[in-house]
Image (cartoon, rainbow over all chains, first blue to last red; front, side, top):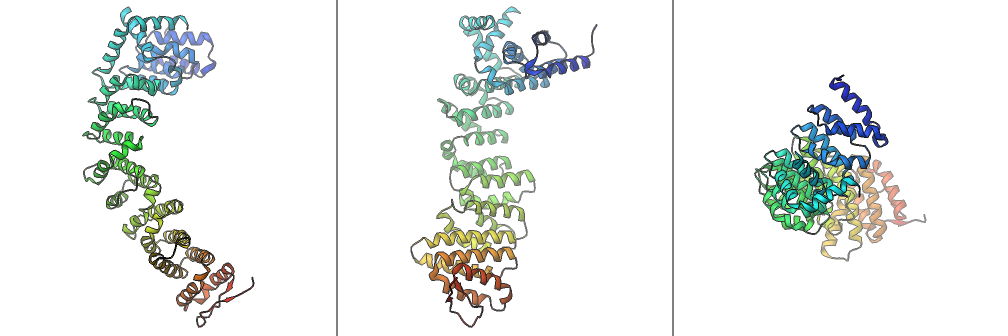
Length: 111
Length: 356
């Protein structure tokens, strides 16, 4: 059964409050939702805001997706992604820009 | 390294050209916000990445979008402040931004240059011209003023423009202009008396007080520069605002302490004459706090220069004629500080020693 956007938003927001203590199933579910690349920008914004304080490893795994959102045509999505980059900057400094771009290159080739 | 990292590392190793191509595409995207997004990534990766990918940043510094150019310069602030190797590669491009038609780009360029004193000092003349220009925007001027204050004493040529600036009706501009002067430390403090004297008598009382408090705060750091401000400070002792007068008296006190340590010369003799005359006059000020400050200052002068006590006494008697009553407390205070009895009679100019 399809829930309305507001319900999704509410549920994602609640999961986001788990922050760094989010259990693995929650992380997996949110990652899955992020990968589906919802057409609705409101869901994308909710997801990006929810994962902002998630564990570092989770963020690093989702980094290429966040990176993609940074280039979104919707300014709220860009801002939400930008917030992750600026608030959790330290997570990324262990990687290189090439590493990040490699994912996108791979994704483009798969397309 | 986990599986995901291994795959990425493999792609990085085997397809460097494809990665560069992707970066180039992002950099040359026709959507300005996508080019700006690239800068967010650079911010997250830190200054080292900016130096590594300097060609991308140089490209973005010449971008047609104001947002992209200003953000590129914001990004460079960290690189310039930390003086990371290779930051000078951006000097020329930022120099061009200083001539940009867009005031936001010019403001950001000046702000970036302020991150390195040497760099800012090389553009001091240009900043002075920009600050003096009638066509320049207020917020660019504020940055120029801040830059000038940070690299050396504020040029006197700037004074009329600073005063004009302090008359701004917009609170933000006014607050920023005052901050620019106060941020300049002693370079700004030395100009304060000149600025206040040049302002209209009934205007900007709050600003005048703030500037006086600021100068008073820096009185000891000013060193010999403080002596040069004496004539202007004397004028301030007649200011219509009691707080300005009180601070002026305190500054005169600091000048007196400095004079006491100097060898006798024509300048010193004249300076003492002015200081004593004005302080004695301030003993009869209508504001009690000003009187108290001048009494304290005269007390200090008498303590450090006991030879001047007869001169001080003579001046005080001359000035206090007809004002004996409200001077009693002051005279008692001075008698105690100097350890000498000061008779309240104007007919007797001599002082007599007492055993305290």
